[in-house]
Length: 323
Image 1 (cartoon, helix red, strand yellow):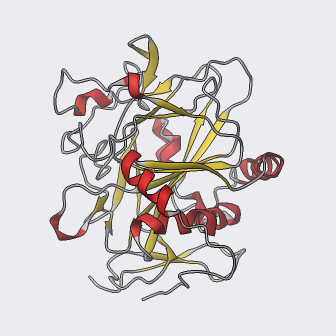
Image 2 (cartoon, rainbow, N blue to C red; image 1 turned 120 degrees about the vertical axis):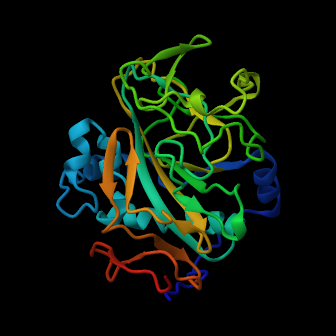
């Protein structure tokens, strides 16, 4: 068992009662400011160069052979000091714990870049994250088949509508319109920049519409809101909330970089009965993976936990306490 203080000395960044009520109603909260633009611009400029060194990354470069570079860059918070600090920042953790309770794991991080001219990301929801492999990646207790994760999406660069800002359809987090027990077919040649009602959209080489429970159903885009963010801001939302992103129109040469960190209560099983992640045409083994306890206690002990001995030391993983 590993423990962490529920609240470190300093300000309390928990959602207010009004913010929490709005979160439960709409499925998201924010944006909130974590870094000033000049601060994160300098940090990200340095960090993106440092991330080229993958010698301590928990996943090998083998996944990149098939072009699945994003999957090989999952969980870089486990080997990079700034990202490790970022996922544990009280400004983030306190707000997440407002929803999930005091005992919280960060179970995954990933980058979402958009370069000038890139397509928008298609509308989707994620509950078990079995959408690409057919294998659930998170499992809530008590046999629940509907849980999801809290996603914190941080803008490390400008995230305007023209550069690929997120889009949400408020209040859609309570009903799943997709069946994740199905399996999408990875076909980047045919599933790139497909015109969907006048917008170039895709889903990283997949067609998310393959998972629709009702093949004739369409998201009500008339209700969509754009979540524009300045560099250094973040937003908190349920993964089951209907979300997408605009295309990067290419009116600027600058890329848009989003960084998603995903959180669940410690009662949730992460990668149950799974030894590898299979997505985007790639596969990475989980032998060096571990979830990070960011708040409270791990009383369940059924997940591999990554621990950090010092601020500058990479995480090391210990096996589950219980089988």
